[in-house]
Image (cartoon, rainbow, N blue to C red):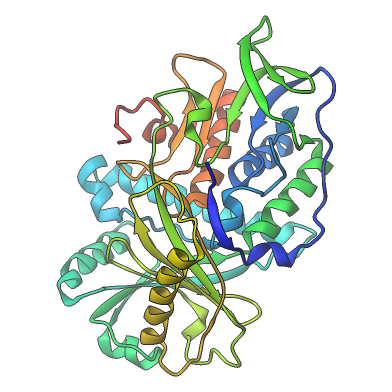
Length: 405
């Protein structure tokens, strides 16, 4: 089943990426990562940087799946607000989880700024506005809980919003410490650096099966096998690969466009990341070459639309929303796509060791800020392999008893 359809923006930024060999022998490693997208390469990078002998296999090519459709917003705030998590987790655990997201965001920033390749990483603030006046009270409650728990947030009223943007909303929260990145460049740069650290990376190498062995497991592929102690499923929005009920997700589809380069974005204060309280929500960002990316219009259907006519209808709706927010601009659609998108029922990712299959781990960052979740997941899995306690692991464990459907 395809993960996306349309004309994608990111691949043009790296027309000749590094390629990696197929696995054509029997090998061994302490850990095997299955998947060469954002989650897989974050795991491969973190594990190899920690001295864990690791092999990564990708059935196609690095960054050829949902990474291509990732819009590159890096925000520690979630689709589920802190105040909403407090109702289900309790405020203490909810705040602990948000702090873990913030640490993951900071770690991604540190990694991106150290990578030899420029990955178009920029630190940004986020404007989270009330979609309608009736959302203002809930937004005020969220602001109060954020500040009470030590998060750097500001309350903006309608006048302050209108003073910095060409639109007026009743209220907004501005959070600091977010960022944007070119996800395609980032994943390829992670691969290059992880290989330098000792990761053995194989493309065109599909996992055909996993069997128990004296060491732990044997991962079978078409060209060879890998004997290992630990298997990490970083398979993105194809959870059925894990063959487990733990790896559940509600799989939807979302839409995005990237505009032509615009002469000026002077009306876009600090080039903030912008999103809203409505569900499904719109989200917007800028790019280094003065394009605007806007996405949203989520639909409860797994398979992307597969005709240009259907895609263009949603793209024109996104363009209309963009022009309503920034009437002084003249954006036109240059790239347009839609893609499969996954989320869990409780808003938390599925990360950790399978309680029924010791040594098999999941790094499934389902949610609007999946890149943040995947970075968190890489650390949790590393800690588990090294026998180091991780305080967030119990909150996101795959057997936490929440139905995905």
